[in-house]
Length: 205
Image 1 (cartoon, helix red, strand yellow):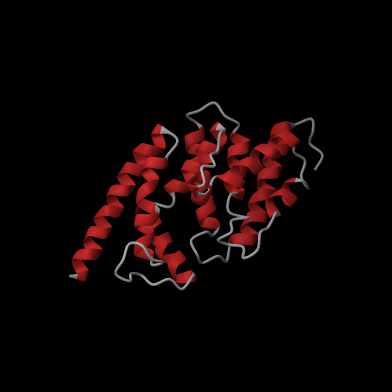
Image 2 (spheres, rainbow, N blue to C red):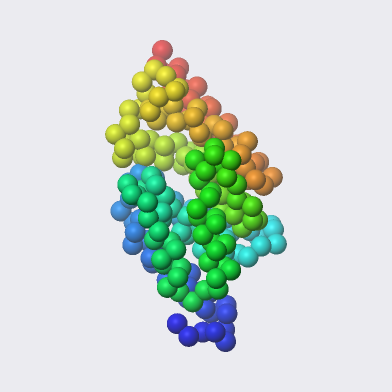
């Protein structure tokens, strides 16, 4: 890849290559972390990025790569993102920025007090969280539960069931959004989830 005299062309070539890399790894996923999830998060992140001064290339790369090393998808710790980034024509500064985002945006990291401090990181984190809630979020919750042999409901909101996951994580995400635009979307999607849960428990009666 020899496009140093045309940075924009180089970026487009890298993005094309990265989409292929991610698609190959996640295309067959059935836990809600497939390439369609990546596609939605990337589009949402780019929509948010248009409202802020930021490095849109870093936003798009981090969004594309954000699930590759996720512990939920890898029984053992992996460093596939770093290995991949070190093989392409990218500055060390941008590599570090992308890695900082992909390593730190998860809900688990947030519970440990770890934050993403760049505007690019906040954008990608919000985009990922938005895909976890609303109608798609409901579908993904049960897809993940099925893929991991979780029961739908066991009578509690504090167990390993899919319904409990709404209370343990999904309903909390609207208050964890970094950006006002994300928060407004999250409020609507959370209302939809609450309506769903109300209907679920009404049917249980």
